[in-house]
Amino acid sequence: MERNRYRIIFLGPPGAGKGTQAERLAEDLKVKKISTGDILREAVAKGTELGQRAKSYMERGELVPDEIILGIIEEAINDEEGFILDGFPRNINQAKALDEMLSSKGLNITHVIFLDVPDEEIIKRIAYRRVCLKCGAVYNLIFNPPKEDEICNNCGSKLVQREDDREEVVRKRLEVYRGSTEALIRIYEERGVLRRINGLGDREEVFRRIREAL
Image (cartoon, rainbow, N blue to C red; front, top):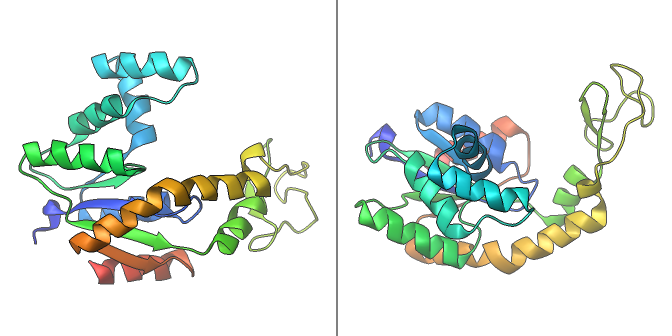
């Protein structure tokens, strides 16, 4: 397969490292990384028709409808080049819509990378994260603790836990994930395009597993 013909989806629970690994793989394969959050903000900033429609939902704090997100993804795809999708699809309906859009272009998904990380590891990665609001430094009380308890090494400010990082919130996010995204794993597994990657270990180790799987 030519390097520029990879069309890849990244799946995995929140905190699995999808964004980091997708970015690294996109650079390595010389393909475009399409993050739904990034392209939504880009479309809004450019003031495209779909961007303006998305903005109206975002300003009201509502979810942007699938058809608008899919349209923006379609605009971001170059038929002659490969891509990596990070953050889409999240459920079966989105996956079906994506299949239909790609099929209309004579394209298909070539690989689905599933970063498999146990829930308790996700809890450790997110719920023990602390940030410095002053200088932006990020710590983890287990994996990368500050020298002084709850105090930033750089500026001495008190570290805080983001609301979204609280354990009960993380467990709820994992529950939502299990209820929707996990169904996609079975679908892509049945198609023979899923690559189940052990997401434990350092970033280089996980990336090596991904490259070997491709």
